[in-house]
Image (cartoon, rainbow, N blue to C red; front, top):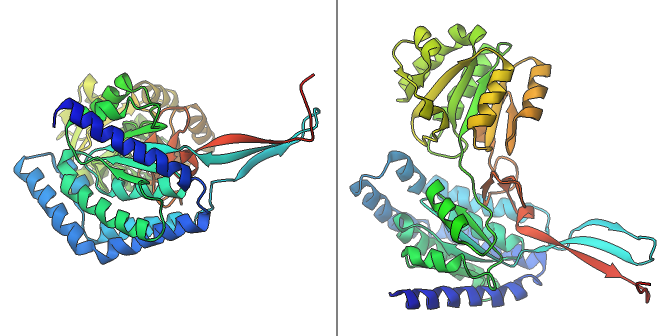
Length: 421
């Protein structure tokens, strides 16, 4: 397709979503829940088709020699499909955010004011690799009364096409207004460039993928952007840490699933405890196939690691690579994190409650953890059913984003003839 044809297709999708959003916003919560239940049932019923088309994408990714972490994010299996279906059912169990009265009051003028939650309207979801985002994003947006435009990456085109076909058929059969789920099939990047400029039709764009993609969208969009942020996450093992707990958390944060945004990329260790925890941790990392890079102090304790460069402290590996740095104090750890971190997820392991409180209050991040793994920063873990992404910006949402983050507010004023004097 040429640029004019691409623009026509994108506008047509956006107009259909806009028309559906007006109807969807008025649909009762029970009706929206019925749509999500039908989608969940269809995913399980049609799992063989999903896996068939996903294998085509995975094999193409392997043939193209794409990174192992990307292939892991791309691959589906029966468990991951069951997880998608379970996520939809968990979203169903959440309170309906639409129409929730956040606050109400009567000012001296005499009118009564309700501040209520309402849908955003039309949400454009632009994402890479993970086909599960197709289902998670659609489920959360529909629960919050929004129409959605889905545009996945070329590496998952067959998986996404199959998933959209299955959930759309089930959703419309269960009463979803026609047009509420839109899927842009073309993988031409010009489609994204057109979509992010449709500020009269699209209310918000949520990009989820590489930092390069997100930066490009931010630079070119006229639609407001709510970005799923880069994850350069740290764990700090304090001198007062429980050693067994510290080893368990630091290993899990890196190796449980290295290619995701809430995985740890840099481990900070207080010098007073480094010789106690690092040999055991290094052994575990080696067994897991994780490459370790360290500063000179680290290398004096575990000599079989590479020297870390200055660039390592600012690198999101999304792979089985870890940089380790020793620090002399809590202050140094906080300073390092606030300088090099991406504001995503940061953790401290310590039995010193004063140190923990300082870390939790002074580290500037969307989520801060005390004696827990950064891998827990997730919508499913937090009880949101799933997540539309994890925002590292501060407006209008920060951290893991569920249904409430996909709403805005409206003031509803009840009067008795009051006027402004």
